[in-house]
Image (cartoon, rainbow, N blue to C red; front, side, top):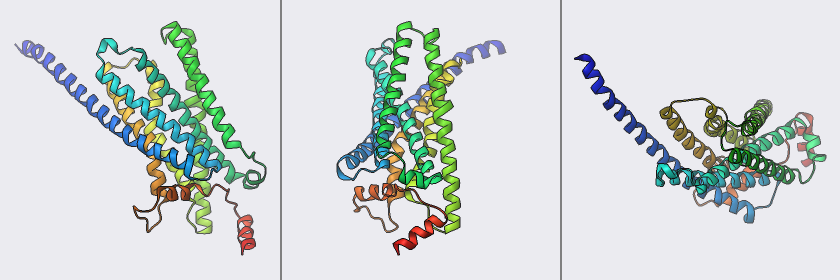
Length: 318
């Protein structure tokens, strides 16, 4: 009799679990879509201000390209979620959905590489201030951004070609391309970004303690953006490049995908909020123009000299 009860309860428990999973998926998807909408507004505002209302500096170029990549990622993320909810299961492999997934992947890689370039270049400006000020190429930021967009486009095109032509991720060519992308994302870009950010944090903290002054807003923006990416956006990259090769239960995989989509949407939407919070004055009010707040964050693009160089610079100005 107990066996009969247990066998009768098992389908009910499975049904309840499936309903709870479906409800969680829709809740996370709705929150991610709403986050994408707010993020698209914020990044569009940043793009407009940097394109038409502000003077271009090296880090303005980086921030502008990062905002474009984030905006593209959020548009594709919202489109993918909407198409998956609207389309029936048998139509989940329509070309529009596949294109949005590929473009979203392209924007994700570009945003990661741009954030790595921002933190690395700022780290070099702190470690080698004289070289950076006098010898660094004038259009370095423009060239780096163009190369990173081209690299991301090339890798995404190769992945699309080989995986779509051979039809399965288990094929050797598709597997090779994915391994190369995994090395590029998790083996090069992410470690370099973390290392440069750690060096930047240590130098800024030591300089702040030694000279008893607050770190520049640009330092705070870079460190905050990197931290938000590692916390919010990296889980989606881990799923794409590692967990997709692991055989997980469909329920666990669906829950992880929905959660990583929400967190990555938060990561791509957070940068305009970071600029707003860091750029405000102590007496900041809502009437202060956003362009003024953004320019206040990005105006300190010159490297900060340490030791005697800093003191001598201050003496010359006096």
